Length: 116
Length: 115
Image (cartoon, rainbow over all chains, first blue to last red; front, top):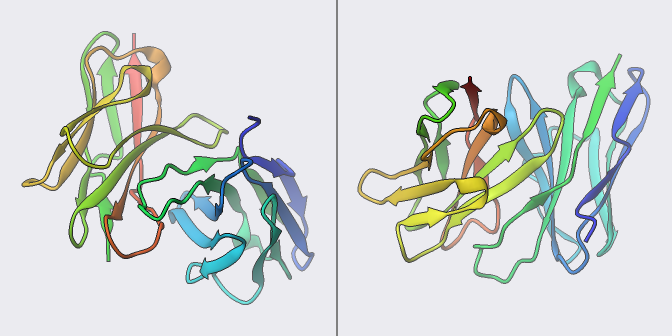
């Protein structure tokens, strides 16, 4: 399997622009997670989906952030409008949730976002 | 709410020496515990996990971790460190029941293995 695929790998944009990050989970996985990593705040869970349904979005910083999962093989994280403080590495992870909660999350390579 | 503490920002060890990266946790009830490693400019890579059973868990690349319920710890160990083990290590926890399948990560420990 190719693993979790994220695109783009790097994104440089100007403040105020819309940014869309994309994720393709591992085939057969039914849970998908979006994380943000910064030096100041470490690794933060933004939102996660089970069976394409958002379960917990309490980590989404504010209304400028939105995430969708229209089908089992694709998810997007959108920032509109972007701000310099959104600069971070954004990771997508997926797992096969069996209900036992012991399943392993597998991470993508991340998207490095720089907002100027 | 669950939490993880990694008390050392950085651990330095000489190649060939044993290494330990510390992790303590707080969770309601019994935990699921995980270790991940992150190499520069890469995503997190799963190393090992404790679900139930034997307190000593063996994982990838010769790493192992010991679950200690009384001390609420899950320290990562390796008998003989390699320079290639130098990376950022994360401990994570999830409760056995409740809390969904959300992982809480520690702040990470930078491991530096020197010749």
